[in-house]
Image 1 (cartoon, rainbow, N blue to C red):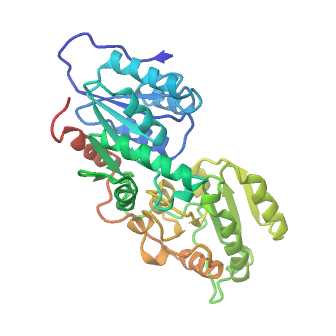
Image 2 (image 1 turned 90 degrees about the vertical axis):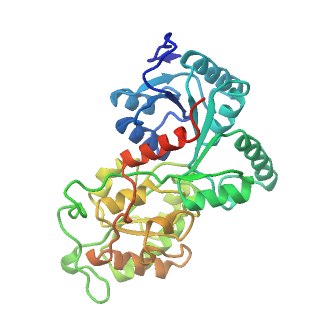
Length: 382
């Protein structure tokens, strides 16, 4: 285990400590949340992150964050993860243990039993339909019971959207107050929307939707290549889009278990020359060469992809599920299994006047961190 923090022997500490427990090593949505908070800090608090060794730990160190990198998470196993967390709690004596993702939620509930420490959780990935994340009814029922029990032990429950909060109440019989703290993003420094990402401007569309001067509409998907992201539906919508914008192209960035199936679908639909599956791409770089971001997921809680696309001034199309309607105006929402409707919405989103901006009052990263601290401090620390 690599510890970049040391136990403070003095009984008086300048700041209370929050130990964030994250069971993933790679960079993704939850890692982005953790990195954002680490970069801006928890006002008045010391932040320490427990996670497996890997890209997240490396990025946290570069940000100057205190990191406990150890054998922790699904790859390490339940017993090793519980023991690792208990060791770190004893060493650091944190005021709050804050778990992120379901695995860490369960481990934290087990590890903190009998310890004088407050337990917090942020729910990033719960869906109204159990089938999104669980493959069978019995597994769904079993996991719901596990989460009901561990949530009853949680002092500070946080949801990233009102939809997430609603799912917690409906599925886990959550009691007490659940704070809703969306993922914070900073607005463009110049104020308003960023310039057209590619430097080429928005494609000029004729009444039929076809691009002028051979300029094709550039559509981008940034998502894990998994079934719940419904990227096959996007392919059908893109086939319809080609009749409206013959030079349109589609980039499907990401990795996941559906990669082979998507390659086969692209070939079978005759879209091989216009659809690219390049694997993982840096989101900012990918958005710099796109006009419209499309996300047809079965469920989303508080999508960084959608928030970043709005911040970049891109067009956005997404399904009206989960937290998406809390982020996007109605003109950006389309039912995923209606390919013609999705295609027409993509074409409309190519126009500057139709593109969305961040909702009024959406929190910045610093405001998000301050809201988290307010939940820690409500009722005092352990």
